[in-house]
Image (cartoon, rainbow, N blue to C red; front, side):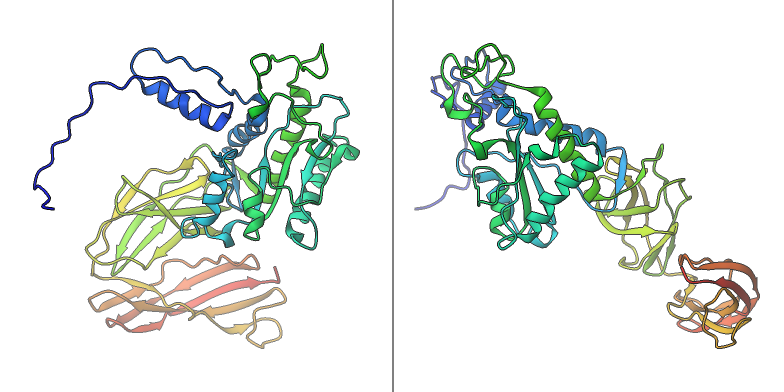
Length: 427
């Protein structure tokens, strides 16, 4: 069959019809999306609203987003809404199988929030599914971390009301992570004792819907949705995740904007210190339009040399200090020219005032010599070491008395003449 060089596709004037939606929230929500972009009026019948299953647990994710955006964390936190649970845990299973985009080694801990708002008998029991120590010891440790957070910040939930089933329950989105060896827990209402919302998902009828105003058909006179029961579980889960993520600092007013000094196949970034910030994440892109990729996290310093650049090519940088806080973008082009840098690994102790073993310890005043390296394209004269700093917590620069290096050929290194003295103590 010969394929035509030009194909013209003419859109249909309209599509009209009726679709019966099963009582399933994942499909119902997709139908709502289709209705939102359709012309005219769409009527959705038999809609599964999903107040308890599962926006009760999902609302914890929205609250976590609101809270976590104000802090810098040591560990990355991902807030994920999976779809297709009722169709066979489709979204979460796909995520765990996309190992190129989501390496299993990076999936450290998973806290799955599902139905958390039904407590028909009002005994306050909730479930912390963490499998068992034989099959998933990391999950058991994570289940304990949930209990510890509950006690550290409260107790929020009476400790005796937290039930930790050890069976391989696979009715929600934590299970695909168990199946690939990732520690995970599922937080939900008391499924283990069959205390489950009577009108969720496909259990819904014409008179029983999973809404916040539904009267409980098994307990007349009380609402099926119990926010006071749900928020305790949500609060404990957020506390557990925050603790595991290790908050470092509250976000500053703004992220510092870097300055860039071009060098020969290198770009020297520096920025002003920002009060409270302990880690600066350097992000890089081909242009300020992005996309940006984090290349390093700098702790204890306000400078970074990017040697993974090529002369004549433009690069864009910004600094991230918090999940939603980045600096202005700056660009630079490395180029050959006069340039001199510290020769990595050249720092050496020449004398010390303590035991004279040239080993910096015991709070001695040590004299340190460093070499400078000409990485440019021209010989240099009267090269002078401008300043010295240390990122080691046990080193304090006492004084620096630099002198000029009379000449430094291209590709050559030489000791920076003068004296740099530092007080060295064990950190």
